[in-house]
Image (cartoon, rainbow, N blue to C red):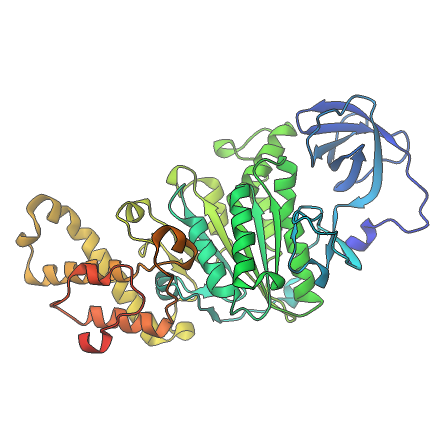
Length: 467
């Protein structure tokens, strides 16, 4: 294993201490008199952890700080640990809230783990990978119908600020963790401390915390921590997949913050930025993380990732590069959110490689295509309705509009994770009920019930009557 060479032998002589020769923001240069460290080695300058990123003229190691550098001065002794950042792995981490080093954030004792592994690991070789054409049912109508999640694949929840990415991810956790047979792992990258505390409390109340691991690198921490916490989470997930041969559900909020942290690190290192200010190594850094999320013969890692889209611009390089790694993309629309249609899933922009007759079946595929076609026709008619009014449309077009508006409302549903705000309990809808409801709406030309009857419900309670 490539990591084995990085760990010093127990009888290795202690390495000579180095000294801090420069401090610039979160970047620290350390010079060593004898044999120096290697790339990715962990150094300690007092209480401040440093990771070697590159070497500069004169042989000094240029490091990114993994903690605030307040009080660090020139000449401070730097100790080389002889290996990279390593985190505890195994059963001991279940039910715990940890940071990038595997140190507890929940007030409990350190995990009593027998094994610690480097967070810098190679992805599984192609010969070990397998493809599983299985769908992970979520109970969320819009996702199960239009962008089914691949078991063992990667799904992205795309959207700008305030369209409901974190709420949708929380609902996916609520719906899937309880029924997931393997281990669930939540990784918070650059998000709010309040959201971490709420998730910790909600998982405890749901009784699923003992099968979960939570790792956080919050927005108030250094860019180095936010850049590495995803690798710490994957190292723990890989232990459950490879050593315990279990399926792992990996939830990341927010993968864009990983890209952003890499951009901050790159800027601090003095690299010339590339397009739109992103680091020139954007594609490589993202691939290093995403390629480790894979299914092997031993088990699968299914990943659901929230993706912030800057200024709702889906051509942004970060969003475009993340798109290329995913098997399903759930796009959240600000326009739908402004109309109160939650979850604000854009049915025309969302997609999944699973939505083929061979995987989901011919009936599901046909219904999904019919729903999309109806909603696309309604989009084309919106301008005419705005200018001339719906009365000027033909009878066929009026029926299309009626169907589309009811489909839009039927694909909304109340969420359990916002019950405190809405006062209404969440509804988990089986896929068969979603298909039956859409089929009933698509098969009608006149509707005795008003549009409001279809809004924020679960399954159609009058499906048989409508049919």
